Length: 161
Figure 1 (cartoon, one colour):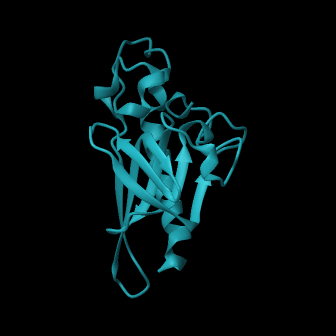
Figure 2 (cartoon, helix red, strand yellow):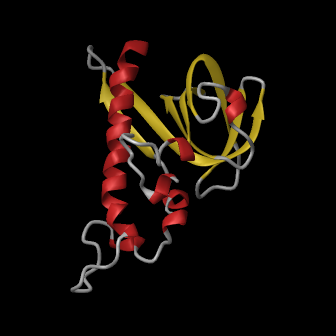
């Protein structure tokens, strides 16, 4: 099942890029005609530095080579605790903490200590990717590691600064 994760993470990245594309105009001035953004009119008036907190997550449904369902969850939130092999986050829009297990195969995208749990601290905004009912984090990406980097697929969108 691990072999499906690289393509699945690509799909998750595509979902994130689609979301960024839909809210990308949000940080731009209104069109001269005064028309609202046609794709996501409910996001007008949200300051760019608050867009991340309005992302409530995503679920990507795939099938493996045998047609078996594979569900990938994308959970954005704020870190409440970092422990030895565990990461607690309060998902956006919720008040209770969800705990994820950090394993030897978890990818951590955070700077300056790329790949290290030590790069994450309470208060950091992150996105955690899991599969199915597992609490094992496949990927943890710190909000600031997702944008503002030259050539990064997320670009320099304010939602990820």
